[in-house]
Image 1 (cartoon, rainbow, N blue to C red):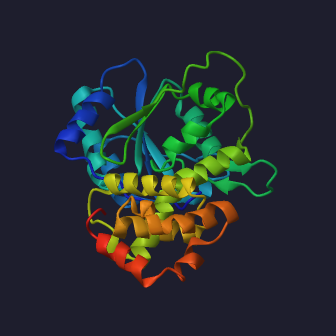
Image 2 (cartoon, rainbow, N blue to C red):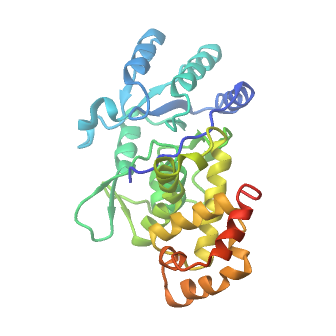
Length: 311
């Protein structure tokens, strides 16, 4: 589960202050900061942590994942003093830059229990598959979707340690998770996170816009914006949802659908001449990529005329 590659929009100064005011508001639980150091400069983070006098801990220490070393997620406990906590949190935000690497947790549990939860979320087994999958849960492109697909028992397992979890969303806003309202009951006791095929597919579908973004960046960089990534992500989600509606399933066809939407208008699929194509795709499972080879010159001219007007 490591192919989440979409960059978030970096919060501006006003957004940063709003985020800090909300995240750092006084509550009874201690505040912890988790960072995915595969996406940040470990040396810079470690140097600042030493300078600030706070201990930087490997999130996987004591588990079989400790071998990730400097590239593992690391976490710190932020000081209780309001001024120090604010200054330290702001500096870490600056060190993260655009990286989707930072989240805050409220918890009164000792660090050992946090490390156990981190290891639990990082090692995933999908039903009866033999090999575990490393889940980049500390990447905030992955974290919201992972927390969303957890079962009631799995959420209780996390909630026993983490009172709340917050992170910066794709458009620079603060997002939070509080574990739901399942109430007391049995919690998952598995040493690793076991996901059903359905849960795993939901994770894969949520990650698809990031994978498409990577392919677009490599193959057609001219249609990828240089800023406003959060808004672009929303556009990709809308186009992929539209592709679902027409039964476009193969990866190459879904990518082609997105390219057409970005270059010919996000409603390109409503062009009357394309309706036979959609009937073949949805009704017979035909390939959009293959069908495009037989599109007439007049259809291409109509699509080309839309280029740049509705994208």
